Length: 97
Image 1 (cartoon, rainbow, N blue to C red):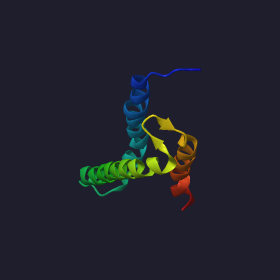
Image 2: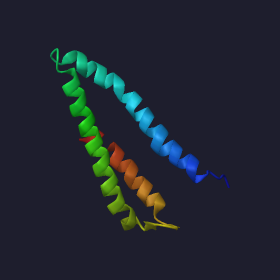
Image 3: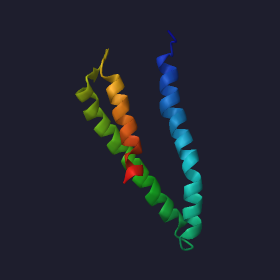
Image 4: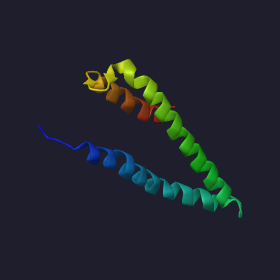
């Protein structure tokens, strides 16, 4: 079976994932800055980033509460498939609204 060291997994999901997320959101910030009134660009960027950071914080807290509900605990990964399906559903949920 393929083996992925824990450090590589954390590096890929936390560090690299965050950097890629920030880079892919830059075109949105650029277009929004061009559309807002002159002099408000920094405020608009601060509002977007604080909203994004708040969302990530809430997602982490909700994830910590939901994970044990699927039976995923330290050393026990029986409900991991169900948890990943739930996570994928939550990811596409905003597109359906």
